[in-house]
Image (cartoon, rainbow, N blue to C red; front, side, top):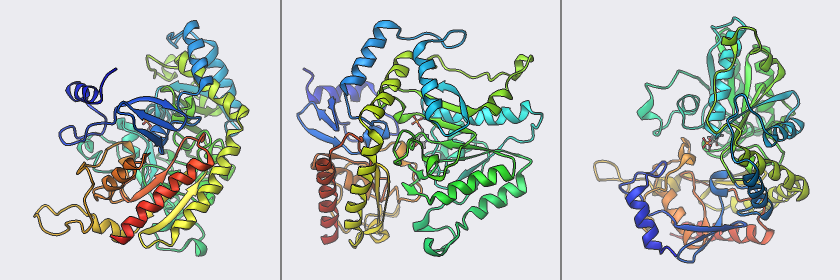
Length: 479
Ligand SMILES: Cc1ncc(COP(=O)(O)O)c(C=O)c1O
């Protein structure tokens, strides 16, 4: 059996980790096994996976039915190219998705991960208008605090952050408009008194640029990496209304929100809207294998049908519609029905809501918000200031509380695209370590602490996790 030091030393000698400053990052957790909501390290620690392994896991790790589906498919057909060939798992999955997606989404295009699903959507939207002879319509509108992935197109429509800065000359220009971040309202209004006035920004851009805008891209109901920002459903219906009014396409990036994360199978259902294109990945395979879908309406699909071959959509990936991934995705959808997964998310939402309200009064808590299987706590600004990194001149903000126990730097990842969360504050690493010591794996987005476990978590485990959160926040209050 590989020892802890051996594995991490070998890792250190050969691996380049994502989003990681390899010079200063602490050694990674040596995970040897997963079961249910737990991950096990090779030195015997058990960690509750409070972030569903980057938001992908739904039914728990190593679910016997998903394992069996994977093994059965591997024995039958592991992979075949997807141009000029097809196979049962891809077709069955497309059929099942179409039957549960918001109405009107009738064509499934497969790719590999969230970012590629977004690239496909952007390219389809752009070519859709060209195929219709409206080649001026090639601009995109995106929201502040958006995160859509790390490939160049997906980065372009994401909020500009320190992470995309080295590439800013490669990114295409995008119109950025207000998002309904009620706790930090861009118009400084109170939700109880507003009429979703922040939508006016989108309306203004579309009114000015409707001849040039190909599509508006949004993360419906929950902007994840930008700070776990939960929307009023009226904003989402407003986006649909404005896209119709100004003849532009609506792309729903449901890579995080799809498959029950917000309590509905798809977040668009909260507002009863159907986008023109929807992007899915993460929970699609229950957290097992990389697979993505961009599903579109028949109207979009038909714009690519022509005797002229150049109007086809020339895009694809070697592992498009991988049969193993499709088979696990089918088994995952089966579990939704068999285990009544959406009902489980409903009870999680109620329990999270009760526990979050219990934290609201704490002096270190600025806001609490939740939707479905996500609970978030935005820490008070005064706390972020206490943890502010030292200024370059060496003076100033030495933290008034103890530094991160291990002295480690922020464990970096795609969830760190956040712009609203005081990313460079040392509060993130402090909390990460504090929870890890207690056996809870959480990765705060700077000052935004969130809990997003696999739906398979029990009521007792949720209570235990919130007890840890309350204890750590109480410690912060008394420091
Ligand atoms: C809303 C959203 N879109 C796209 C992505 C990118 O997905 P991937 O990391 O699979 O490329 C993410 C990842 O966190 C996401 O949250």
